[in-house]
Structure formats: C-alpha cells, structure tokens
Length: 103
Image 1 (cartoon, helix red, strand yellow):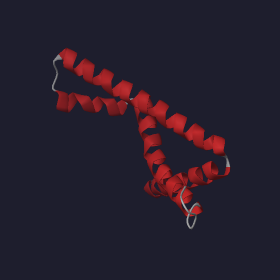
Image 2 (cartoon, one colour):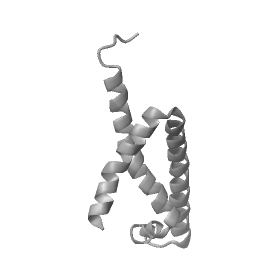
Image 3 (cartoon, one colour):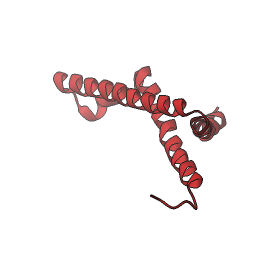
C-alpha cells in the first residue's frame, strides 16, 4: 500500500500539470479547489483550537484530534498534491518560454 501511495503522490501532480497544460479550464479548477481546500482545512483547524481553548484542555495533546476529521485529511491530501503540481506547472511554463525574450 505504501508503494501505491508514493507512486500516486509522484504521478498525480504530473497528470495534473499535463492536463492543465492541455486544458486551461482545468488549471483554473485546480486553483479553485486549492483555495476551497485551504479554507476548509483552516476553518476546521480554527474550530478545533477554539474548542480546546474553551475547554481549558492541554493544547499540545488535544489539537491532534483535528487529524481525525476526514474533510481535513482530504483538504490536506489535495494540498499535498497541489504544491508539487504548481512547481511542475511553473517548470512547464518556464520551458515553453525558454529562448524567448521577455517583454
């Protein structure tokens, strides 16, 4: 299972970059999903921290409960795929413009 996860972590950003390079609307969709995921994960994290502070519990031990939320894990997983995708996308754009004089 670890091999499948690592292979997917490597392959999916390449597929995303290729699709965004070919279909511009998918690049926009990937950006919108990243922004949505950022706000979802941030909202969940803030609410968990608020609950911990409100209860007066120990923050360092109780805050890890945020990892039990499936929506937080999905948003975090997408962020883990989005950042390598953005690096690859920038590399593709750079290679496309190589040799051209900037305006």
